[in-house]
Length: 229
View 1 (cartoon, rainbow, N blue to C red):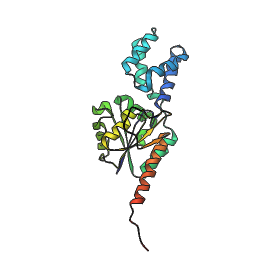
View 2: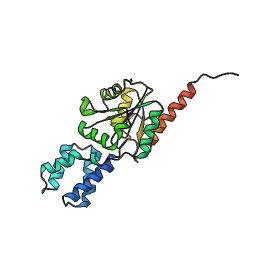
View 3: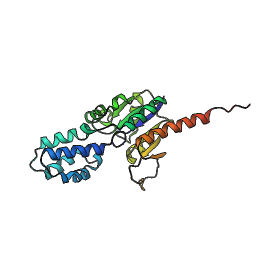
View 4: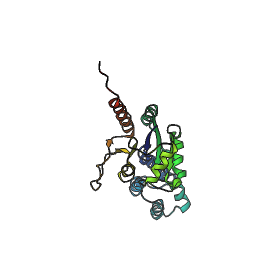
């Protein structure tokens, strides 16, 4: 069994697009300026701003809203608006058919991340998943990657891959545990302050998955003994 670990937010799912839809609906529901969409997106920082800090910022800006309203929005967040792109679904199926055990490894809260997985239909496309809150460790810590391997009874070895968009979480974690990696650049340059590099860089997750499948297929061909006639 070949292990293929996959990040969730802004890798398998376009979390920022889903959150933008959630923000737009939130502003319209409470008659708030829709021009504030970009402000909320900026302070959210692709989900990296602590949720308590996001709640404080929203309450400071929208004084007429109560804490319960803001918390309900944050709890739902992008989860109710995620969409699994068909290109991603088909790439996952190609990887599975090629013998890869696809496991999601994601930071976040169990309830929210599992809701995204279920609503998007990823639960029927992958072999399993681990969420940081559930295992007590966060990427790039070795333990969360080991827990993901355990889901399918696999080992962390150089034959495996990690695909993700976060250099300091996904790619650093792959380096830590000895996995090859594909970084989704999402239009960004690689951070110049990082000494390590991903094994490969891709435009999107479908391209990343297909690269893993092709690379392994080529490796298997190269390893076949030659036959003299």
